[in-house]
Each structure stands twice: as C-alpha cells, then as structure tokens.
Image (cartoon, rainbow, N blue to C red; front, side, top):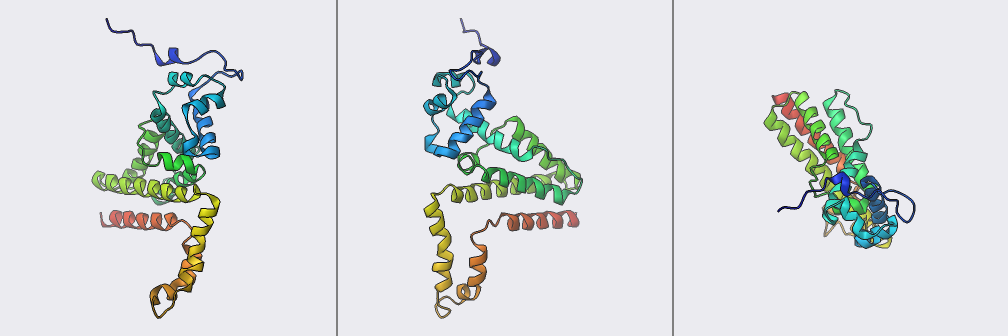
Length: 233
C-alpha cells in the first residue's frame, strides 16, 4: 500500500528552535541570503544553515526538497524584492525601464546570490507575477503577441545576463576587482597610437566608462528597438 502523503503544512516544524523561534520558509531564505553575503556560495551548506538557524539540519527538508529547491526560493525572493511596491504608470517604455533597473539592482545588492540564481527558472509566485507584468506592459502597448514574446525574452535575458555579469565582478575579492578595474588605466590607456590607434584615440573614454555597467545603455537600445517595432506596427 502506498504511504499516505503528508501535507506540506504538516511537515513543517512547529516547535521553537534552540534560539526560541519557529522556523518558516521566509526565515530560512533570509538566513541563506545573509550567509551567501557573508561566506559566499561555498559557505552555504545545509549543515551551516542549520547551525545559523539553531535547528537540526534535517529540519530544513521539511521546507525544501533539497539545496536546489532552496536555490529556486532564493531566486524568487530576489525577484520579489525587486518588484516590491512597483506599480505600472501606463507609459510602457518608462515601466519596462523601471522593471529592468529594479531587477538589476536587486541582484547586485546580493551578488553571491545573483551568480547562484540568475540563470534559473523558479516557476514560483514572484517570478510568475513579474513575467505576467512584463508581458502585460508589452501587450498593453499594442504589440502583437509574437513581438511581445520576442521582446520579453530579449528583455529578461538581457537583464539577468547583465545582473549575473555585474554581480560576478562584485563577488570577486576586493583586490582582484580593483586590479581588473585598474587595467583600463594602467594598460589600455598606455597603448601607443602607432600600434593601437583606435584604443589610443578613445582611451580617456574607455577609462571613464568601462568600469561601469553597460546595462542602462543596453536596456535603452532594447527599448529603442521595441519602440521601432511598435511604430512600424
């Protein structure tokens, strides 16, 4: 005979932990985010998470099927933080730009978590609500569904790709990140115009720009393309 399935709510711990608190999924995710910030991806283990929560590590499996399930919950939390308080204004371009910048910023606020989750599809509530909002912005602007989906894909992939790229830089040890940033001034700006005329001609601009994220520029280009599609339609 098959075993009776225990409802998820019944599997969760009701007794306080050693620290006197009752665990919740939200509490575990918040603690995991803090541990990622403090110890990096390698420092986030079930054992360490249990210690931080004052609970037996096995208790976590009452809330998540495993560490991958926890990773998806973290991804959804970042999206939720990004969209908290957002309201559509009715201006499709301004709304899409704000959503993109919100997501990018939320990921950069948690670079270790961003590197861990930016390529994942969680299928959880915050992610689904955000996808619904983005598609709503595009369809409300008057784009046919094929164009709305095409631009949606480009928009979300562009946003998450830059989030992962920029977060990976922020997640580097400080000395390594500083050394990378210095290359533009110490190496590129010193190249001879006789051997590298194009780099030499643009060196001051490269030094001023290349250590900043190109996401706002790329986002603007995508919005221009969407606007052109809308105008042509």
